[in-house]
Length: 555
Image 1 (cartoon, rainbow, N blue to C red):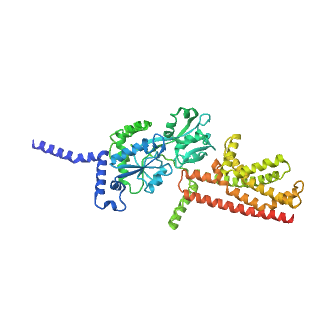
Image 2: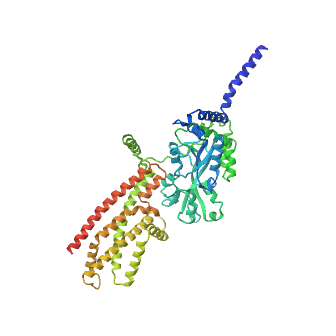
Image 3: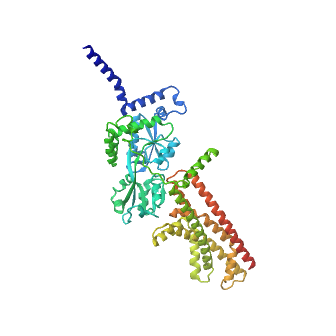
């Protein structure tokens, strides 16, 4: 009997010893322990004034948590007056409540949600952000993920687009910072960038955008509108990606761990699923995740680090250039020796490098074309304005007055609209339209200078009945300064062609920075390129001016 009693006591002792360990392995117990420790650390006198405080402890010092959410993303994040609505917003409220904190919401968009974390303007972001491998170096994603989507391309039903070859050389409207932009660019499509996804349906309706790419979860709301559905459909989808709540990389170990455990519990208990249903969001992914997180092997405190339970990040690694390693080494050398964090993304991946090369070539074509068009229109309009025929002279003068009174952007838009009405859209058509617009704008001014010079010469000669070739040549020589000035102006104005989708260097670099970092370095390089181009143009125009003035002297 004593042996039995001894065995019973031993087993009871073993159960008591092991029970706390088993209990600690559950996400609920681990979360309770973690939050209790953080609250206790915040309650220590003077702790809240210390520098380098753990983020979760700091939150308990203030009693608030700053959450970045979107305001223009139907079903997920919208704002009506002072009221915030949507799945992401309600997830933020539920997480804050579980932490015992008061949520304070801040508006973010695709471009600002990561920088605001890095700048300590928000504590976490819940903003429809896809978790891809590239972003792992920028933020710390919470596991498990709270939603999943894929990017879908939407356009008019009349447009026959089924796969990537069909979008080559077309412009697709996207948002800045969208992770799928790199994949779109790699298939030779152009990008038109917007800050907010919410404007994309409107730009489709008013035909500013022929195609738009965004998460299928975003367009789901608009496809509930019969009028939208009657005009547009989804062409194809790609880049299925899990969405992640994210925190800053440094100083957030406790906060990230707490949010990991909360996300785990929310999946297991159906909290995410309940919030999705309340916001009329698709629930397929969440239903599958609830099954996963109710499995015994996943429902543990370490389940959120188990590859068998959590989803991997989308791997969207771009093909590197042959010299990517040397570029990276140069960037590191610059930062080490000068403190300048130089980033040159256009030299490190093949899609960016191809965009960069094409942008330079197209820009040079655009500059040469704009110079030629300016000179041709100047000579033509100068001659027509000096014609003795009323039928030729006054329409030309009216055209010049209209061009001189119109904003450059409006002239570009009209030129592009006419070109696209006559020809199918292509990069060549966009560049051609820009050349014509820039040539007309600057050529009209130079042409007026020629006409005025010709009128002056005719007056000096007593008003001959008609201008001669010799007299016209002298007028061109006399107006050399004005002609050169407007030629230089045409070269300087070529970057504005990006406004109508011409794939020149500004447009190419804008595409590159939509999926890569280094915006400051990238646009600094653009400035250097155009300074060099304008210097060359000024030198050539100087030679032209000298030649024209010599002709006037010899004449």
